[in-house]
Image (tube, rainbow, N blue to C red; front, side, top):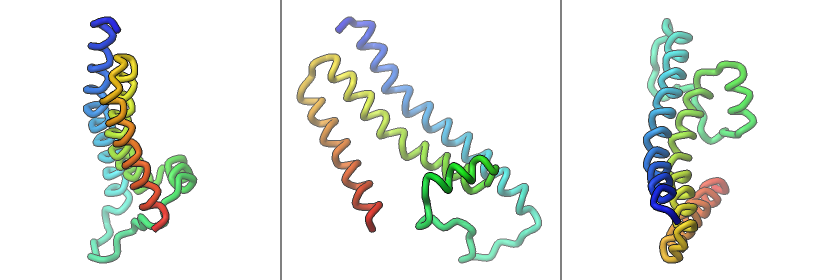
Length: 125
């Protein structure tokens, strides 16, 4: 692998976290502003938050986003924040594959396996 390709992969891995965090932040702030604008006269009562995380589904998220639902926009921001480190591991794995670095490829695959098993266990409980 050429030095330029290696540097490009390193930049991609490094920028993934930075861009993901800023994108997530921006989307979450937009959702928060829409939520506050739509609920400006409401009084906050502890214990009565309108979000129900146990009822999450991608189809409900998609429908909420298309209808401009503030909580769905916030959920998208959080989802992007959760996906960002996973993408970083995937891009690092790709870089290790290009370098033919088998040890770090194995470590990246193990990390992705742990993440996948955690998602599976969390989704079934």
